[in-house]
Length: 186
Length: 186
Image (tube, rainbow over all chains, first blue to last red; front, side, top):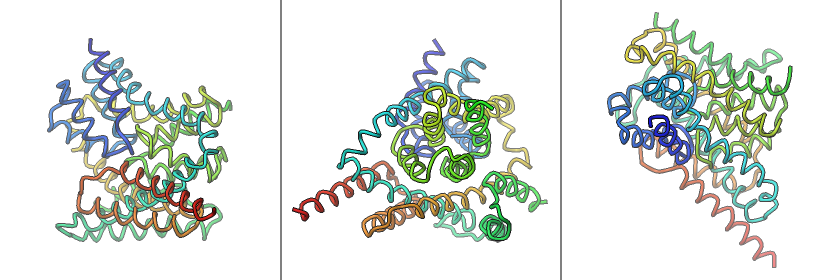
């Protein structure tokens, strides 16, 4: 039964992929190869597509595999399955959190986790800017267009709050950068 | 507008602009849910990031479920989560038919080259905002610095190391610091 397989396969992906994003790719690969839904070439292609479309990569894969295997209903089945674990885990944690954070040991653990996660996020952003501007560390290749765009867009984003009363929203920044990307290469 | 509809629309808008693996979305959520709508506080934004990062599933889904549940219980969580998924579901479903040619569309590739730059800036911005509201003490700065350097090295040299291990380690550090403080306090 294809719907059951789609549901079970993507439930596993949703349940065991921590931290989101690229950590999930290995797990997605295991599952879709196991069921024969995609081959390696198609997987790499789909990763590239997921990068250029909005939404979490797991959801993108679930929708794609579901719809190629069993149409709209398949797409819905797989997408719901990939989301269900995090949905219930977050609700479970929220209903326990009040009691848990009163526990001193849990509180101490969370005090340790907070700065660690900020470090992870900061490093991810810095790395992303680095690879946009200079490529791979083993083969550094400065992309001057991207360096210029990074500087200009950062100035626009961070200075807009100082010049005007309201700071540019992240969504406006994304729209401007997409337009700039199209214009720069013409 | 009913709160459920507002949650749905807000997260659909966020979902439409979530590129690049979830972290950039933290800047979007901070902008809409903390600053504009005042649905959650800076402190809750911090716990939200901690929960999203330490539980399985896409960060974007964890965030939507969290904010929705805080605003209007289970119904709110469902409205926000579905809102988050709908844009990427529709886009992937629509391009399934011509997936093989999707990346050949020139303006899509160019727009995304621009968006990647914005995503890098937004992730760094999200990290700075979280750090600004962090409780400042030597231990948290030490953990922040260590995790930043480690994750940067992991990314730059494509070392295979899970961020979950790092999060667990920092939780242990947090507990040890608490216990040693308690021991000295005696």
